[in-house]
Each structure stands twice: as structure tokens, then as C-alpha cells.
Length: 162
Image (cartoon, rainbow, N blue to C red):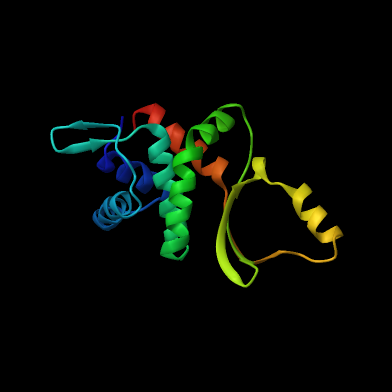
């Protein structure tokens, strides 16, 4: 189990952040854990503790925010990450390489998020729709995170006692 202070130290190590930037990183992680409803797994006194999957989800949310992904897209991303982080860790441990994608899609005139990992992309449905002579959804933009690389680095930190 890891505190947000532990996560700050690990993220700073992974990103090569100098000590003077760590307080702002710590504040950002605390804000993200509340804003995106990241549930804690345990509590020690007043300190919330998170498992590896939650820390991985927080890492991916942090990277998306740092890259300018809009808040409402990050909210959808955070919900998706909470359901898929354990699977992502399992796949990293099995040696798989994959990315996470946050796409903004226009479907029937409305914009909506489409979040997915490389391992779950359903191209069969898109082919059927295109074969019918029209495309029901059009991707307007996408944020792609090298998820396996980031999770691999974070797991190295969590398991080394850094």
C-alpha cells in the first residue's frame, strides 16, 4: 500500500523532477485523487493508502492532465482506469506492450469520449458500419499514452521500495 506522498516520490523519480518541484506535484496528485474520485484501499491515521493499481491509475491520470487533456475527458478516463488497471498490471507482468487511448468522437452530431486499450479495440464493428456506406462515428482527436512503459516503470518503483 502506498500513500500519495509515496506516489509523489515515485513520479518525481520517474520524471526526473527536482526536489523544489515535488510540493506542486504532491498538491496536484492530492487534487486528482479527490477530483477523479480515486478510492483509497486503506487508511493509516489520517493518511489514505492506495494499492498498485490505484497508483498506476493516478499515474495515467496525471500524465493526461499534464498533456492538457480536458477535465471531462479525464473524468471518463479515470473511471475507465479504475476498472482496467489490474488488467493492465497483469498484462505488463506478462510482457505485453500496449497503449491507452482517450479519443474524442463525434457520434450523430454529439461529442463523446471513447477510452480504450490496444488489447480491446473492436475494429470489426467499424468495418461493418463502413461497409454499410456510412461511418456513424468520426474520431476528432486522441491522446495516446504509452501505458505499458509507464506502468512498467512505476512497478519497478513500487516493488523496489523506492
